[in-house]
Length: 271
Image (cartoon, rainbow, N blue to C red; front, side, top):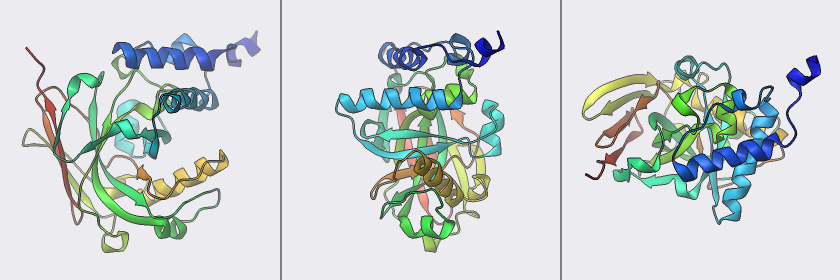
């Protein structure tokens, strides 16, 4: 009987991926996968994530980078998890700085401020050091990540968010590239404003001590799975602050010391 508690049900990957893909299509969140499929493991969750990525690629999507999530104590406390995870960024997830986005394309969006890495050369682990990761970075940009969950009410465990592509939603990149050696990412301060009001403050050091450490973690974890971070790809290392919810009509700006600012507005719902 004990084996039944830890054994993943047959076909869980395909079934769970189908539920998540249906949630995207219908706009209706689903129950936590860890409730629907008891015994779901982290490896199962990454397999579910990849099954969705394969479906997107089959429809013509392109992978443009990766995100690391849950790297700050604030985000781990907020979502009740205890370790980082990663997800895929596709071309459809990217929005221009200062653009206006239809909030209806997301289910239950939140915003996080991040410093985005743009790679100038491929990076593959395992065994990547901080020096090697830094050498692979072409430049950094101010960024906002729109996180979203296909799991109802954000009632997620680590396996739930991993399966749900690390709760990815969208990415807004600033337009001012900054060389990595021109800024100390660990000491870079961040201010997050919504509708002109200061909502959160933080610093790069909240992201595993430095956002660069998140890039190292990602390169090594993906390397163990046979995946290379490609030149030109964007890597989001994790949020400097807790996330904030956003609604139609909201505008959000993140300002980073020595790097610049980035903003997005969410269109009001049609009457």
